[in-house]
Amino acid sequence: MLASALIMLIVMLAISVPIAAAMGVLGLALNQFYSSMPLYLAMGEILWNSSSEYILIAIPLFVMLGEILLRSGIADRVYAAIAQWLSWLPGGLMQANIGTCAMFAATSGSSVATAATVGVAALPQIKRRGYDERLFLGTLAAGGTLGILVPPSINFILYGLLTNTSVPRLYLAGMVPGMILAGFFMVYVLVCCLAKPSKGGTPIETSWRRRLYSLKDLLAPLFIFLVVVGSIYAGWATPTEAASLGVLAALLLAAFERTLSLAMMRAVLEGTMRTTAMIMLIILAAQFLNFVLASIGFTDGFGKAIEGMGLGKYGTLLLIVVFYLVLGCFMETISMMILTTPFIFPIVVNLGWDPIWWGIVLTVLIEAALITPPVGLNLYVVQGMRERGPIADVIWGALPFVGAMMLLIGLLMAFPNLALSLPKLVMG
Image 1 (cartoon, rainbow, N blue to C red):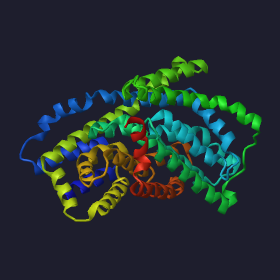
Image 2 (cartoon, rainbow, N blue to C red):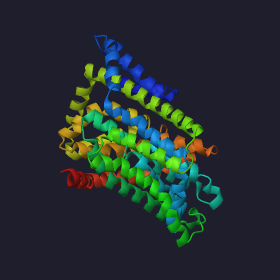
Image 3 (cartoon, rainbow, N blue to C red):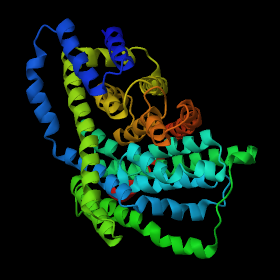
Image 4 (cartoon, rainbow, N blue to C red):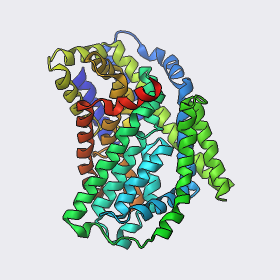
């Protein structure tokens, strides 16, 4: 059953069937071959129950928040300001790429939106400043992955929904690992540029006066972060309500910057509807497939097979990590989380790992899937904005950053409190 399901899924992905359609077709096929009951008759109820969850409203709101920041020009000014402060480091604007991604991640909640927003501002600098193209592209693709680890995060909302885990605690748990991972990325760029200075390009001209003047441009993301995350921990809003406050704050900033217009709002709404439709189709198809897998006994059988290997707590976890790394080469991240969580989560919890901790580790693994070929979304986002040259440049530039993610997972396994100490400190 497992082999046939995987073969069917890989074949459909290989012939470019959209992931939502592939999961829906796979669910219907498994129902036909392995179930004695017409499970497809329950599809209407499953789709309705899956799409009527209140917390899902936060997804289009966070997508809209990122779109407003992109279309209003706020992201360009944030990038320019961070470049003023990080240009002295070896790697110059590549360090600014990562720093801007980390800051934009604190407002967006989407890795694709983060990579796209920073990429628009950064890509023209490759030729202008003489940077190593592969490394520069890698910093954009990998830096964009921070969008789902640094709160607020759409993936944390989905994980909380699937596992009945506190989203505010997940947000707190992601802060320290997110900063550590951004630091690992910056250290890798620093080492590369120290080893071969020609990779670092020509630094931008700056002064302390310019740096101090640019601080005002960093107030916008800080304001939105305080509105969204601050309102949650102050007890004023749920994550969904905080997302709506974030959209309102972004609109006020766009109006203040005099970039708010009907044309901009039309582009924002089109982008929001397009992305939200894609995410919701994936959620609905994955929920139906999960129902079929559970009904035909796949979920229980998979869990028992893993536990029956007798690999122990750490051995089993390492096997699961390898499973996600391989699966991430073929599946889109949201569908991978929704599809696998129902049968992987019980195994992890039964091993004694904390559900909040596993949410962070799973998110890091999903980050790796964003930059591993052939289905890494951030690779295609960066290549699409680049509009020239082979995608192999983006792939080879981004792959070394997967090593930094594996290093972070190793640290989280050795020191779980890197993720758990902040939620315990703030929320008890």
